Length: 134
Image 1 (cartoon, rainbow, N blue to C red):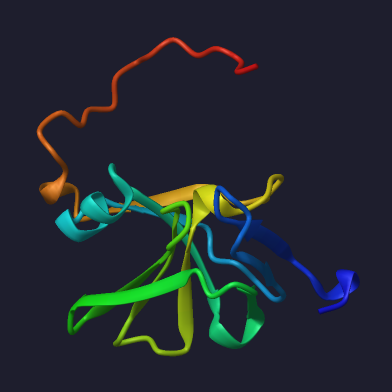
Image 2 (image 1 turned 120 degrees about the horizontal axis):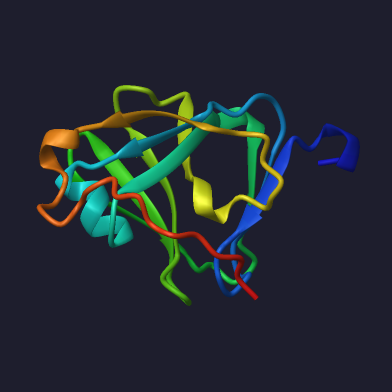
């Protein structure tokens, strides 16, 4: 994919799995369902793109897909464990991308929260202090 075609790029923590996206990305949706919470360790913040617009590079074969239910499949890096993608079987033309794996600046914003009734009991939207990270 040429640099002028690329809309976004991203990778797992160790860099073994990288990807480029051309074409539009959906704004971010937070999902609090029990599967997304267990897959990511909190809630999932995900964008999505057309499958045909995502080019995944996995030279060493670390991208691992699993499908715990008929409705959805999830992908992670088998080397570092980073949650990377999920796909709904009802939308085979779309690939959801874990937003935290996108290289900034993304130009995206969080627009919705799904399955908030399944959010864990610790989850609140408190007014927390913010600080810059080093």
